[in-house]
Length: 200
Image (tube, rainbow, N blue to C red; front, side):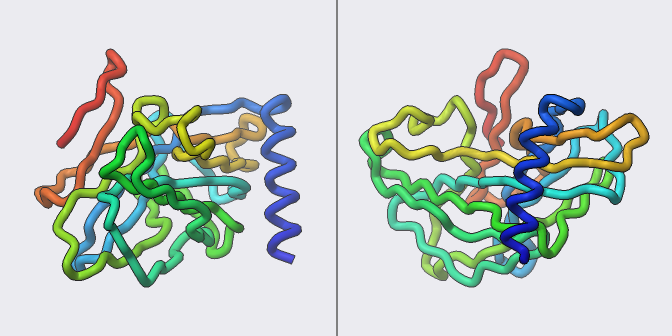
């Protein structure tokens, strides 16, 4: 039933690109939490005000890590996410691993709130890990499509909003955002006005 519901939502999102306003208006971040787990968050840009009548239909999040990186204990908080691809040491970045998590269905529901973060899922690193991890930067990473492995790494999400009062809205991934974080193990990157990467 959940699979059928997700397929229906994906179809609605695809059709809605013709019938509704589409906004690149959702941002991702990767943060280390106080309990030392890692969390992936989504946050609307300041110009939109999502209602509580939303439905997510698609998504992918790719993490860039050292090639020997391992993790465990994925906990889904908003939506169901599973690892659907991993590429170790591609020709473009032989010291990196690209780990992609795919959206399965909107349960638990992804709730969006204006100017607030929503935690999507968490995971735990190997205790001996002391490197740096980051979110994939669409279009800027050396392993962007097309690549030597013929894979499709990157970040994406599609959420419909039926309750804005201005017709159906489609929210999509816009980029990554920075947070105040003093942990050197986390790298936050975003596009500045000139399209260059900035690292915290």
